[in-house]
Amino acid sequence: MRTAPWDRFLTEADRAVLARGRFGRRMGFGKWPALLVIDAQRYMLGPEGEGEHEAWPSSCGMAGRAALAEILRLVRAAHGAGVPCIFTRFELAADGSDAGVYALKRDLLRSPNWCLAGTPGAELAPELRPGSRDLVLVKHKPSAFHGTNLLGQLIARGVDTVIVAGGATSNCVQATVFDAASYNLRAIVPQEAVFDRIPVSHAIALFDMDRQFADVLPAAEVLAWLATLQAGESAAP
Image 1 (tube, rainbow, N blue to C red):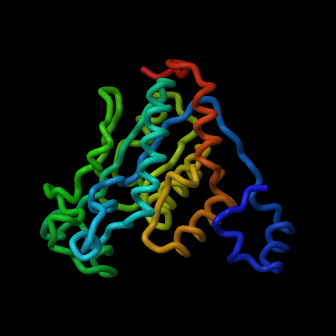
Image 2: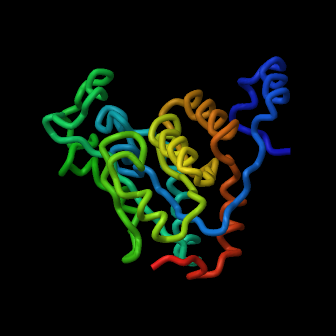
Image 3: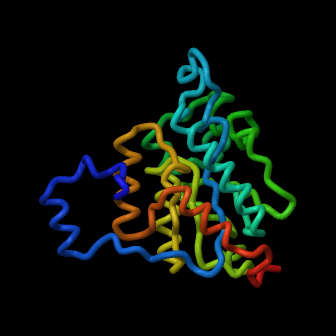
């Protein structure tokens, strides 16, 4: 039996609540997916080395870089199956003028290694090279759906399932999954392909998504499903 990252945090009373409420059923894969890679940016991943966290204040460190390896496998598999890949970048104006209430919860970090527009930190991780048919969307809020044309792009491509990878699990990944469920899209979260700064936040976010809004699955299972798809199967333009 698969051990989920959140198992060690649950009491027997918690498990009884889940059983009574019949939470956590599998929704399964749909007919045609898109791969959403959420904010796999330089400021989120940082370089490996001494002083990493001082120079890259929002880096998720080794957890992010381990997840990036799984994300790259998913991107290759999606490309091989003709599945659309959509990459998001979170960025804020250098003066914080578009930060909104986010600026009430966190200081604006005036660093080129953060998510300020036009800085190296806001760029996608260099290992990620979107293909000619892929999309890169810039967002200013946690969810990939908010203020972007993501939903319309998914509808145009006949997508009923979104595979959500990237970071951070407890922030932008979770917000995107919740919105996907609100639009009646199936959401699949490859467990090893999402990352966070704080292990407990990561585990509980995965639990909350798996409980009611998504299927949190081993990345290998998602890769195996992608391998069964035929390139060009969807009604996408």
